Image (cartoon, rainbow, N blue to C red):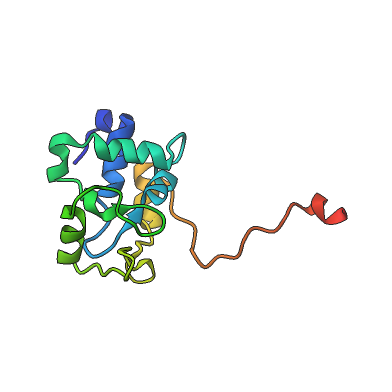
Length: 135
């Protein structure tokens, strides 16, 4: 379990969220950034994944992929690990997001750890600003 000091480290916050992605599911760099919030963006998550070092033994890095379901690492190791967990891929080599895309942490877990939940994927787009309707 991460200590309070660890959770002040932005990368440790990213790693804690990544540890919540269950086997057989994937999350995007953007999903992780949204959950972490603040100044975290997808690029920061990518940098954190590249800096894992010995933490790669406990953080399921293979479950973090790009927004189209593509694998961003070189070689076949990430895909092999995902396939071993039951993740399936389409003919273009992308994870089948409709089947394996993680919905994010529960609201209870997110609040308890100072994170955000992911918005529902089937939510309608936000209505335009009321003022724009005047024109």
